[in-house]
Image 1 (tube, rainbow, N blue to C red):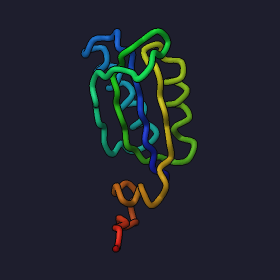
Image 2 (tube, rainbow, N blue to C red):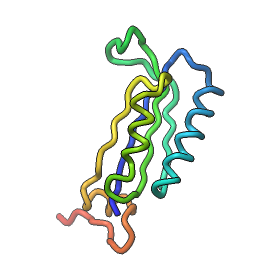
Image 3 (cartoon, rainbow, N blue to C red):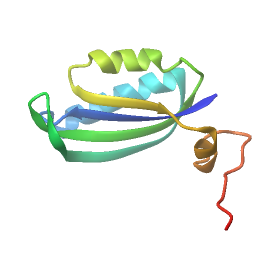
Image 4 (spheres, rainbow, N blue to C red):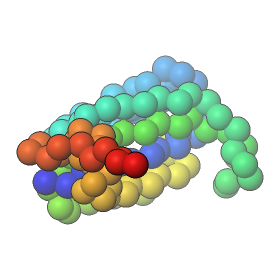
Length: 113
């Protein structure tokens, strides 16, 4: 199993209900292929620079655990979704995943001075 962090930016032209519906669908799709640990909804934020002629978007960060390659179908859907401005999926290093408590059978790493 691998730990991942997925950030999704939905179009700022959507309303809150549409974004929440899109997030429910995304959650369901993620839970089909892996285990969702945490969802952090940041809400509407201003972009540092214009993206596709847009200046704002709704940010969400998902922490999840899945098998290698299992997130390919989720990424494919995000890539073609009209309401998603950007997304970024990264695999967390094992020590960071353990620190966050995402990997079973590992103990969190603490800094020793």
